[in-house]
Image (cartoon, rainbow, N blue to C red):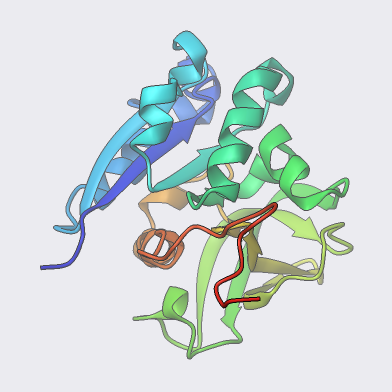
Length: 242
C-alpha cells in the first residue's frame, strides 16, 4: 500500500470574506476548501487547511512537522505573513517538504525566499482566454491531460517572469491578448521540490476547473518527499581505513 501524503492547503483567505468581491460568491467557504475538497477525494491524501488569520497562520511547528506537501495561495496580504513562519516553511522545504505556490503566490515571501529573485511579472485583468500547452507530456504533473487545456476567463500573467531557470518546465500559457508565460515550473531546493502553477485568480472559478484540480493533484504526488536518506554535512569519519 502506498504511503498517505499529508497535505496542508494554505490560503490567505481575505478576498472571500468581502461580500462585494466575486470570490465571496464563487468560493463561499474559501479557495482553500475548493482545493481541499478535491484532494480529500484522493485515497492517498490526508488533507488539512490553514489560513492567514489563524494563530501562527495555522502553521504551527506540529502542523509543519506533519505536512509532506503544502499548497500556497496569497495575494493582498503577503506582508502580513510573519518572517518567523516564512523561515520555518523554507526550512521544511529544504528538509524535504513539497511546496506548490499558485497564482499570486509568486509574490509570497516564501516563494521569493526560495527563488532568490524578485519573481516579478507583467499582468492584466481583462477576463481573457488562457490556453495552457503541455510542453512536457512525459512529466507526472501532466498525467491525464491532453496537449493543452483552456480557461475561458483569466487574469493575464506575461513574461518576463523574473525567476531562476526552472529545472523542469511543464506548461506554457498563451493569452488572448498575445502574451505567453511559463505557467508550470519545477525546482529542487535542498531535499524539497517546488512547483509553481500560474492559474488561480480569485475573481474567476479557476479552482472549480477539472484540469486545474487534476494538475494540483498530480503536483502533490510529484512533490511528496521520497523515503531517502538525509545527507550528512560537516566533519565525518572515514568509511575505509586510512
